[in-house]
Image (cartoon, rainbow, N blue to C red; front, side, top):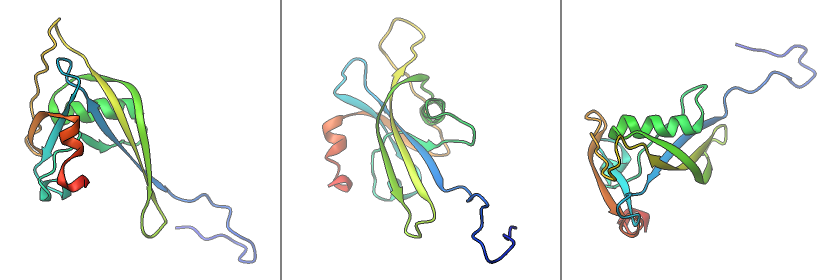
Length: 146
């Protein structure tokens, strides 16, 4: 609860939170870099459209973007990785214009346990229906993106 006094001057109280920050992960197949790792969700908008998407999630309070990207990839796929860079940032304003959404697409490099290029994954059973490699072209050509 807050109320600025006196009423004849503008409030100098800081605004509340104004942004939600999310991350998306691009992980290219080390054996065939024309392929990226994609997931299908069990529920939500992406599942409704039968969409293959990059692993995504929200940044926790106090968490850095690279750590959030690594955490989300690990949670959804069981794959350990580190961020090598940010490919793009998208900013969107909600219809009420009170809050905005910042989304970072992060390129990740897998942390492999041995000298093999093979990546083993394990889907998060409560959120992820399936995981696979998909060509970047096929990913971009999905009907929902058209």
